Image (cartoon, rainbow, N blue to C red; front, side, top):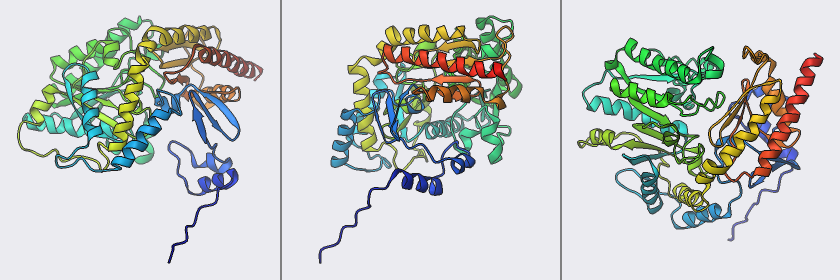
Length: 462
């Protein structure tokens, strides 16, 4: 007897919103927000634009700083379909691999800084950083130094949302609700956030002070107990903090002097965003471990990577001990195939060089004009990664209270004009796709100027 095929009827917008409100737990969202209003359903996207509910918006955040080659690339859909038709899945445990994963590992080794020749695949930046934490413990134990377990991170840090990576974050709001206490295994040093904390120092002098705070933490804990320093080359989630010149090189000098590993969390900055393939080249430092995610597939499918320097590999692969770690979908053949095609696009279209030589300088120059607004204290950027710092008093860098929600108001005013940026405390963050045009940058600046003027007028009116 032939089976009857039951097709799900197409649901209306209102029906979908009701299902979402009833059943979907959204990340980083207050439940009250979904009780008070239905979710905004995005249903299509192309280039630098997203669309939903009849509204089209210029997405100057590239999703979450991840859709680097832009939305709707047919070559990525074709790569996924071809890979899925050929090998929809197989695991990578017990010395098994697949052609896309093997090729992707080689491509990343060719692109990565010298000496980084081994890669572990996972599914998110959080998982890549969690893997790095476990590998660091594995490494020091194999070296006969099991006491080296303390990890140093920084104020404003963001490294993920697993329990272990959440403990690395420099934002109490991400730890306190879950009762996560870093205890004695995580020490937090000063962020190189000159605008907020530099006082009368030049950015370079403050960079040295911030680097010294890392050394002070190492000395206080005892270098024999400190395993690694975790850092984002540009601190993104808390406001696109671009480090002063020389800061990261000084951090590397300190770590080498005290036999402490450096982990470069390049989940956002890796694969081109700062105008070089990796921010280590942009800022002149070398890490022992590097994590990648967002731009690896331009978020078309979930994939991340941890890359490891040869000096680490020599120790952890020095005997027959099994690395007891992995994920069901590590080195997934379909996600690896999409990542390979994404790298093809970046290389064939010269997008990284274009950021360094054209888009990045143009982006910064146009955004800098917003410093004329009475609400803007500083515009900072590295490549296509920018923060617009809002302030109350420019001369003293005094901020408006966070509970005022100033950035949210400006962000909403921008959205009403057709533009997406990301409010982060008192900073507007922008991470546009690499295919953004000069005209779209011009539109962004015009919209932000109008939004800032609207909110400033409202503040003055009380």
